[in-house]
Amino acid sequence: MQRSVTARITARTRSTSSLVFALAPVRNPGYSSFEEHLVVLVDGAPVVPGEVGDIHGGRLHTLRVEGEANISLQYSATVTGTASAEEASEADLIRYVRPSRYCESDRLLPTAYAEFGTLAGAELLNAVREWVGKELAYVSGSSRPTDGAVETLLGRRGVCRDYAHLVISLLRAKDVPARLAAVYAPGLSPMDFHAVAEAWVDGAWHVVDATGLAPRESLLRVATGRDASDTAFLSTVGGSLQLDTLEVTAVVDSLPVDQPGALIQLQ
Image (cartoon, rainbow, N blue to C red):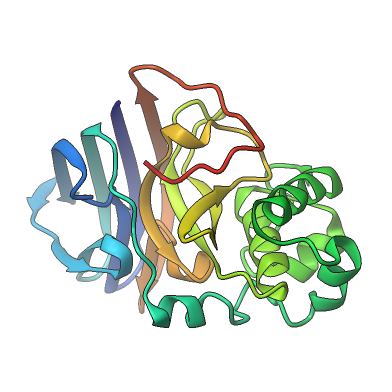
């Protein structure tokens, strides 16, 4: 499998700002080749951003900008091969079963047990995926950045991050470790960064995507964490930033057909 991805960001800082970008795919040891190119301009002049390792192989690019400035970032990568499966540490299995900022599994525990009873394993994953897909309507721009799973369920609509947060919360409420993965998603329309849930079942992390908007086998991991607070493609530490442009592309040499009931790992 060969996947080619790009991301283009333009923005303007309004004061001195420290920026953090999460848009480079994980360099998984299973890939046979990995080529990437990153160009960052500040007021038209090239700069070299820093790179910081994140959890689960993620990579963050950092940039400090003094005062007001125009920022341009262009990233591209071509990844060939299939990722090696990631193990889960004992700490992971504790961390990803706890409630978090946008995944209030403690508040949704009664809902999880009322809807899914004694279901477990793959049967539970598929039941949660189907239920969330039926209960929510995918509506662009319908949710606020501060909305968590409870607000999503009450509003009955959202975007990919909202679907993932609700799936994660319901699974954690059933004592299944679950986390969020930010990904490039060939086949997604309209094209953008995508968010899916991953659940630890039968000794492996399996993708659960209640939106059904892109085949899971083609997804390419960028960042992983408890929820969207750990996986934002752009964060500002201090200062102020106006995002002007975000353009994402993701293609694969042969787009697979997703089998919704199958257990699929990120590849």
